[in-house]
Image (cartoon, rainbow, N blue to C red; front, side):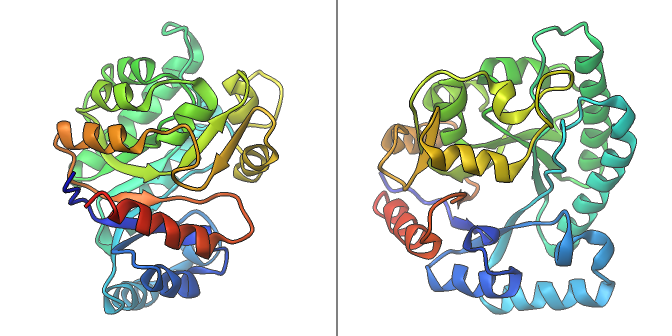
Length: 293
């Protein structure tokens, strides 16, 4: 196939902190890293100019690049207009940090895009995303929405309503397979004008499930997006299960071919949200991707 995309790893998947996670990413053969930058040591508010410079030098000293930062703020994404002012401002600070660290991409979840394009939730999401998109565009950067909560065609229809492509797509094939049952290969073609970053993850859908039970929805049962809860669902084998690369329902040969077909040249970033041996799983995932080169 002659796959030429660089391979990234989400540092947090190792579960050992940023510094040690960066070292592990290098050890397993990654060329780039994605890092959560919402709270704790990576919260933009906690990183002084000196600490930012030190972190960037450490990453590049390892011979790594930053493929993206992760800026998921949880809750209902941007469905709740009352919470959006603070979330939009926090998202902007995460993008500022990303650009300063050398990447133009922040991945995020915006909440499930409603079916009703004329309702208040849709309008609140449009308003927030349009503001974020314009801010990102002013910096030649992107907020990249992760696929999975809704079918690709529905997400594209929402993105097409925004004034810029500053809000684009972080394509995750496993989320589509596990939750909506959408076809990742066709999804790549549908979203081809928006894909700026990708995740490489595999999964199995055991039975249909309402995406609102996974990701939350304003006014629906549950408490909104919670990564710990999603990870628990993905490891329980109930409605869906995240599995090591090559053991699930994602056709990676066709998926990678579709990315090549649309001219995608960005990172293939490995995400492993479950399992007891993340380093082993991630190392095997790097080798799995390399087999397509």
